[in-house]
Length: 125
Image 1 (cartoon, rainbow, N blue to C red):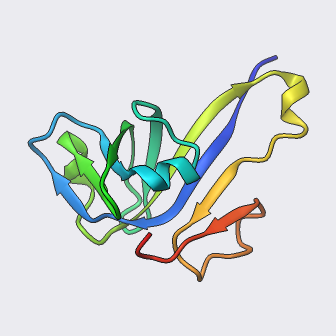
Image 2: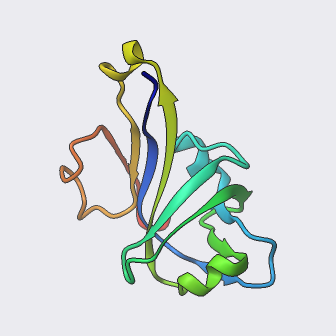
């Protein structure tokens, strides 16, 4: 049986901008995407820590420090909101037991909470 597991997560990133007139997506700092194992156009789920809103979209690479929510989803967040960005992948049974997702924590107050191997970044990363 194929299972869907968390592949990677950016934990508690601050939204730096919103653009309702853009054609959808979330724009994420290209270097942060590399650290979080996210590819451009990859599907991600977004969880707004401030409001509880949840939505799916796709990744576009952005400039340094950018976390921008675009299109209709921009109505679900505000600049400064904290979001969790999660990608999932499908794994065969033999891959599941040894699977460890990549977790990038943007806030130093979060270490040790997730139980996953974490890469801690400064809030401005």
